[in-house]
Image 1 (tube, rainbow, N blue to C red):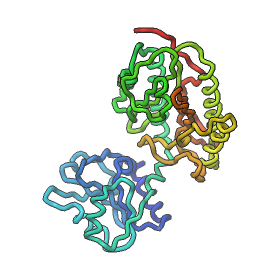
Image 2 (image 1 turned 30 degrees about the horizontal axis):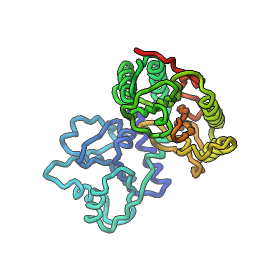
Image 3 (image 1 turned 90 degrees about the vertical axis):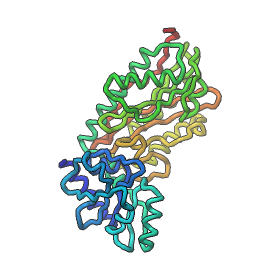
Length: 365
């Protein structure tokens, strides 16, 4: 529990630096980060309250209390079905002034709280989210292992998938292979795009069958010890294709140039702008339709985010994706995604799956 005690203290210090006297933390990821417990109580209120002076208080329904092993710094405030939990919470948060609210607290609870304490001034808080952006060595080690498992699954699906197959069947193959590595929860439903479907960055898998002479986008990840993995590779099913190779080389070059830029002090915006400039030089910038990357950790998408309006600078310990893509409507799309961790002198690439142009042999199972 030592690491979680340290996180609680850093949260209080961050509140002080933000001149925030009170904070409500409610998201499952934030609560796990601060307590080491997966606190998911459905529709029942649960939140961690900081006032900067007293022990943090965890408000939670009494039937969940026996499942918890909390740092000694946290005081538990139980409520039952006979209570109104917001009324109980209101007794502790004061009557007026600012109170920080993290991004996931239900608006219905906030409305109830403001009905009871109309003088409160809720403000959006990113205190815990910003703390989570800097991973400690334990978190990095878990993310490193999570990435290795994703690499192993990518190798398995490329080498062992039977054809003909549909996008949905390939997704189920991926789920099965993750299970073989004792990873039973996926970071997200795999994004599998065959042919023209690969030109949709967030294509929803369906019953489209893979046929010869098509691009294949495989975007997937699993959850290992609560931390996500995420990786994308693009392959081609069929004979060597000159147009596919031309676009692939553009994307790979930009992706590797971006990875080479990663080090403390570099602005996230500059990485995104570099990629867009590279694509513009060859006339494809309008076909890059999403941000360059996102943070990765307890959640699939968390800070920091790599886009051209984020002028923040990279810091050692940050973990995020680098995933440029070019998407040609009606033809195909190509995306290459790796996860990197910023080090004191540069970065470490956690995902190690090959990025050479790869053709899947036309074969049938």
